[in-house]
Image 1 (cartoon, helix red, strand yellow):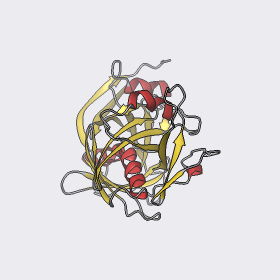
Image 2 (cartoon, rainbow, N blue to C red):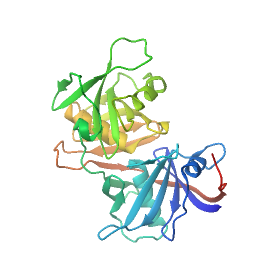
Image 3 (tube, helix red, strand yellow):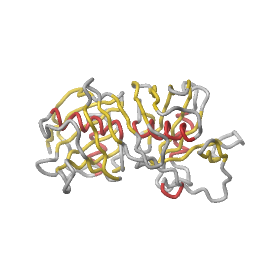
Image 4 (cartoon, rainbow, N blue to C red):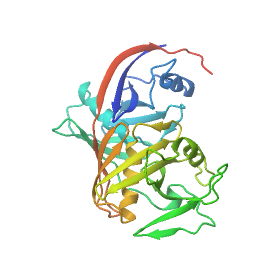
Length: 293
C-alpha cells in the first residue's frame, strides 16, 4: 500500500502526519510502527492522523500513535503541528479550531508570530485519575502540591526518588533535578515508565528550575523513549512546579529541541496554555508492506 505523508516537527519532537479526511487508511499497529521506524520507515516520535469532525461543534478528530504503534490519549507538540497542517492544507480557514482527542477536546490557535497556542485543558492531580496507585505511600506536602516517594527496581540507590504526578490527558511523573544535563534519564526513565504504580505506564519528566519563570526539561516518553521535547510533559512539569510553589504563572520551558511557553493560573478550574513552533519539514509518499510482524 502506498500512502502520502507530511513530516513535521515542533521543538524537535517529530511527527508523520496522515490525512484521513477523505477515508480511513486502516493501518495496523505494526504499520504505524513501520512508519515511525527511523531505519526502515519515515522516522518519527509519533504518527498523527487527521480525521473528519466526529460531531457538532468539533472541526476535526486527532488520533495519535506512539513510535511503538500504540494509540495514546494526547500529544501537545503534535497538537500544534496538527493545527498548522490543517490550515496549510486548506482543510480549514479558521485560526482557532476545536479538535477531538482520545482524552477530550482541545483548541489550538495560530498566532500572528507564526507559533501555535493550544488550550491543553485542565491539569489533573488526583492520583486515581492520573492514574497512579499511592497505596501505602506517605507523600511530602509542598505548597499546594505533593511529591510521592517512588522506589526503583534494579537501582543501587536505597533512597526513593520523589515525583509529582499529574495528567494532561496522559500520565506524567515529574521529578526535580539539579541539572538536566546529568540527570539519569536513560537509566531511570524506563524504570519509571513501567513502574507498577502506573497501570497505564507513565511519561517521566526531569525538571530543573532555573528561576521562577525559566526551567529546563527532559522527558522520557511512554512508548517512545527520550524525545527532544514533550508538550504535555512541559505542561505537567510547569503545573506541578506552580503547585509546589516554585514557579510563576508563565514559564519558559527550555527543552533540547527548543523553547515552549507554558501558562497556567494555578486555579484548578483553569486550562493550561502552551505556545510553541510547528514546522513542516518535507512531504513524500511511501510503500507500506501489507504484512508486518
